[in-house]
Image (tube, rainbow, N blue to C red; front, side):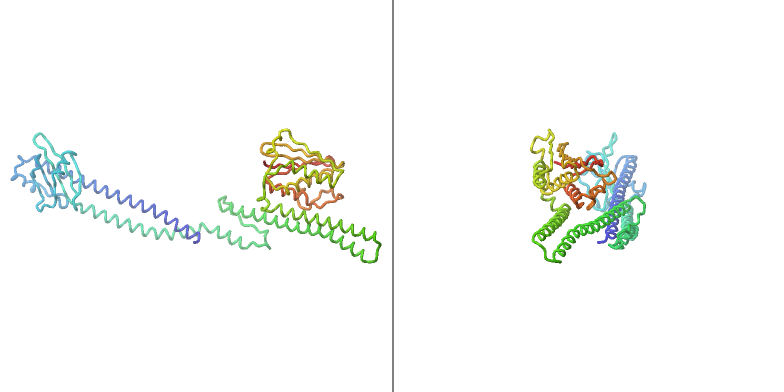
Length: 454
């Protein structure tokens, strides 16, 4: 069902419920008022007739008939009864016994002084009338034809108003829903026009600061992120292709040179060793690109488990010093980190090892003395690992770009590297819901601080 239809039905249903409730309230209030008003008329009529009776000289039967000549009953089909304290009928205007009055009813009137009840189409009012000489029970009965006819007319009017107003409301709600959804249709039309070719297009913002304006701003923000991601992807593919092409071109060139003429065994060994170095370089690039893709995968996050962070750091230290025996790596632990659980963080051991291996190797590469300082501190519910070197540093203007794929600072162009490591580090830390900050002064060294939640 379309939103317009659903809004129309919901609006009509809500208004119909309110109108039905109001109509029922009006009807039943009117019915209750009619009943109360008619009982008051019965009571007044009974009192008037009783007073007239009491003004007669006694209550002899031959004198009671004079009441008929004193006035005509003001109510439709009215009957009037008078009983003495012995429950003897002193007077009745009911010639055809339309009303049945029992002893229990008379006793109830004497007990309650005044009662109201119904019998068939008749409504009755029973009153206790007492003075110094008489204790009479007076009962007045009549049918309220006018009142019931008014109620029937009111019911017909309420039903007609309810039906016709619902029809009118349905048309009005359909038009109103269409007007309310017009901005959404406009947004849908604009979105349909945006494709990969014109991804720079944005939705028009009405500036009304309502929910639709927020939706437009959110969608435009999403388009900005998509466009930025695609631009980054294109740059990444271009840079990755360049980095992969360089060793492949070198391999191809060396092999072509080897095939130009016959060479000695030593020369073949030298060329093969050179090609092998290029292949290793190519393998390193491919492995880092695969790790970069893995760091963006949600599957890796599902493999998280408690990891002893210091064990990871020591393993990284051992692996690096096997490859680079001259490197010096100092690992210092905070005195507060004494318990084993204080040193554990949830994560992927292989990815965290990649983070600290990259940071330590970068520090060694750019340090003058190949010396690295690793400080581990606990702060609340997190662990901070600072990897510091005393090397060439990073220019201040380039600090914000160090985590971009394939970026290399201007003062590091002569040092071998691919510009993938720090980008990989940043993505792995982000996957672990951590943070990484960099502080550096050119010529004095760089410090990378990794914050991980326990």
